[in-house]
Every structure is written in C-alpha cells, then in structure tokens.
Amino acid sequence: FLQGFAMGSDVARKVQGLPIISNSGIAGVQGGGPPGLALELGPQGAKITDGSNNPEDVQTVAQNQFLSAGKKLSKEEKAKREKDPFSMWAEMRQAAAEDKFPKGDDVFLYKFHGLFYVAPNQNSFMCRLRIAGGDLSSWQLRGVADLSDRCGGGYVDLTTRGNLQIREIPASRGCELLEGLVDLGLVNKGAGADNVRNITCSATSGIDPRELCETLPLAKAMHHHILNTRDLYRLPRKFNISFDGGGEIPTLDETNDLAFQAVSVTEELASEEFPEGVYFRLALGGITGHEDFARSTGVLLRHENCIPVADAVLRVFLRAGDRTDREKARLKYVLDDWGFDKFLTAVEEEMGRPLPRVASDQFVAPLPPDRWAHVGVHPQRQDNQYYVGVIFPVGRSTSEQTRGLARIAEKYGSGRIRLTVWKNLILPDIDEADIEAVKQEIVDLGLDWSASSIRSGLVACTGNKGCKYAAADTKGQAMYLANYLEERIDLDVPINIHFTGCPNSCAQHYIGDIGMRGTKVEDGEEMVEGYEIVVGGGYASSQAIGRQLYSGVAFSDISPLIERLLEYYLDERESGETFAQF
Ligand code: SF4
Image (cartoon, rainbow, N blue to C red; front, side):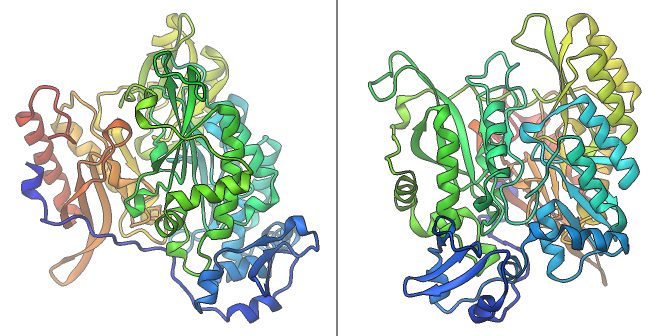
C-alpha cells in the first residue's frame, strides 16, 4: 500500500548543514593567537596543538588530506583557534552585565558552554544541559525549574538525548543560569558546538527486569571522562555516544556516532576468547539526518573496555575528521572515506592492542524493545516496585509541572527521575499500592501517563518558534495534529509520528512510523508551512529509514491526510502487522 503511494525513488539525500563560509586560509590561522588551539604547518603537514610546547598535547591532523588538497578551514574551525571558548568567561560575564548577546564567531563559541543565541526566532539564549544517562534527583529537577523561572521562560523542553533545555534566557541571565546549574551539580561544558553531546543510556538501567547489563554507570563514566579530558573538546564536529543495555525502553543507540549495544554470549556459544557473559557490540557512524544508522564493526567488548575504546575512537576522529566542510565533518564521512577496516586499525594503533572481533552468530542480541515501555506503568525487576512513564505533549513541561513531578518522585518514589530519548521521563521505584495515586497526581498536573494516545508517540523538534533553521512550527502543528487525530481515531498499537523542522532532523523523522520534515510549500501565490512526509521508519530490530511518500504538503492538508492513512492501516492490516510492515 505504501509503495503504491511512493514517489518511485529513494529519498534523495538533502543535507542542509550550516552555511560554509570561506575564510582566510591557513596563513590567517597561524596568525591567530592561542590560548586556544593553534594550527602549525611542518614537513609532515598540519598539526593542531593546544598552544603549549608539551609534545603530549600535540595532535597530528590526519585531515591534512583536506588542507593539502587546497581546502580551507571552516569558519568555525578558525573561530576555535582564534579564541579558546573556555577562556572567555570574564568576557561573557561583562557582556551579561551590559545586557548584550554575543556577535560574530562568539555566537558559536558560547555554544561550548551550552548557550545558544537563537535569534532571530527568539532574541534570547537557549541553554542545553548535560545530564548523563538522563539521571536526575528530585532536588536537581526542582532546581532546574526554579532556574527556568528566574532566568528563562518558565518551562523546560525535554530532548531526544534524554536531556533538558531552558529557553527564552535574556542576555543578562545566561551566565547566572550556568552558575546556577553548576550549583545543582549540572556541569554542561561542551553541551553544544563541536563536542561529545549528552551521553545516553537505557532509561531503565538498574530497574529493568530484562536488561542484560546496567548502562547508567557507563554513561556516567563516559560523561566524566569527557568533562575532564581537554583534548576531547576539540572535535571536528558534534559526536553522539549511547549505551544500550538491552532493556525495555529503546535508546535509539543506532542513531549515534558511537553505539555500545549489550549482547550475550551463551554457554553454547562461549569460546576461550569470549567466555559466557554479557558484552557490548561496537557500532559506528549513525546519523539519521544523513540517512545512516550506526553499523556493527564486529568488535565485541567487555564493559570495562568501553570507555578506553570510546576514547580511542574519539582520538582517531579528532585527527581524521574533515575540518574544512561542516556538512562532511561527522564520523560517518571518515568511515565512508576510509572504510571500517582502516578506521578500526587506526583505533587499534591508538590503543596499542588489537580489538577482539566475533562473527554475528556467536552472540545473542537482546529481545526487541517494547515500543510503549516509556509511557504508562511497568513492573521493575525489584519486587513490588514499578515505574511510571509520563507523557509531555511535544516534550515541554512548565515549571509548575516540573516541580510537581519532583514532588511525586519524593513522595512516592526514591526521589530519582530518569529522562528518556523519547522526550519524556519516568518516575521509578513506586510501590504497587501507590500507583493509582501517582497516576492521579500526574493527571492533576495536566500531564498524562496513558499509552493509548497519539501524543504518547509524538516527537517534535523546537520548530520555528525557537530555531532559525525551521521551516515550520513543528511543536504547535504536532499538537494540532494530535488533538485532531485523538478526536477521530482510536489506536490499539503504538504509532510514532515525528515532526522535524529541517534536514538536521533533531526529531529523527526518518525513524518514525510517520515522519514529517518541515518545508515551504507553494499555495497559490504565497509560500506556506508544510511538510515532506516519510513513512515506514523504524529502530532496533525494526531498523529502517522511512520512505518518502509526499514531497510537500501544506500543513492545512496534513491532518485529514494522516487520518486517512491511519484509518486505512487500521482497516486493512493483517493480524499483528505493524505500520512499518504494512
Ligand atoms: Fe532546528 Fe528542528 Fe532543524 Fe533541529 S531539526 S535544527 S530543532 S528546525
């Protein structure tokens, strides 16, 4: 049926990254002064240094191939070399005192602190936090809500990296907010720009009845490794890392540059090199905005080797990534260029030892995740304990709601909160006797826990209310569609609808059952907001990049179209057939 609608060709790659701006070239960079990074030219080609004379700190830049081919460093690479983003605090404080937003290259450099100046859509900062593994205490969550009231717009956005963002921060309040976060134990250095982003892991780590391995300790170890390793703030581009323990809630690890996926070696499959136990499969190069999932390398690791291997992968990427073209600066393009064998050899050289490989039939993958495990009530592996997944329409929570959830976590749970990559959170450690009270308190906050609604599978990026790249009001239109469909359609299976405002695909539209990508559409003589529509995407064991169904539909036509699509599926499907299979 879907093929019948299809446009007859695969979805063309339409990568729209940041604009590439020409720069004055290498000579100009040499003239730029440390204390940040510096570029040196020598007989072996270019090196990036930290400006010191410590040979330990000098990193040969393998992307000499780009520079020697006559390409020029990107504007962002120049900016990093001309000013150290972590040595500009006094300057940032002064700008805050004068109520001034950053200008020019400083807009990019502020992102190293997690502060994004999001003009023109909002003449304010957005602050992206770092919450390793999405694990928070109730007092931290309450503190974030209070900070949002004091320094931001009085709400928080949940993100697809199990993280939080605060928006509508005036120029005068950016530094105050960062200081407040540190006081809460939330250090968000490197939360934006060319850094390793928030580390994700299984949201039910430690409480999941069927997980193979706890991943929260790994996520925290990786987080602290990054925060405390100077070299790793110098990547060519952003980098995502995920640890999936094989639990019920999918982490979407395959959408990450570097994915560790728990698998088991059973007694029957055990060998001298891989005795019976749980290991992590290493996968590399995921970036769904560029229509690629992380691909398995054949390397199998014990949990204690994950962080050293991640460090080595990052160091190879540090040297080999393209610093001349921002659109090609992600790990995927190094892998496409080098191939996996060459890349893994470089990682092994970095580590000084070989990485153990195994055939894919020598271990057992975990069971497929439960598509609705992030919402509703679910038993934990601990006796008489449950977690409750809370739904946030399009991933936003007012400060009142946020404080209310912190209170529920303290009153009925253990005071911990877990954020998921599905733009929602779970409240763990609830006694069976308190489940009904927790459900009622969630509803009293104006939120929901029910897994049967359209909005439980709704994911929307920031959209044009806060992001300059957006072609459409994704959050507002996603909510309109949810309201429209919930009045007309009763779902008995989960359907994920992802709204993303531009090809950067922050809401990962390519892996949704239905994916929307914002675009401008001609409507008579004017251009209006609309969407390209892809269908049939998936993740984990149903991994698939969605196929394009429509190239540009005005938003005013979207709701009845999706209604017909879902009705057709519900009427015509075979027993047990998922939307993606249909
Ligand atoms: Fe902005 Fe959405 Fe595009 Fe991400 S996907 S850059 S949030 S418009």
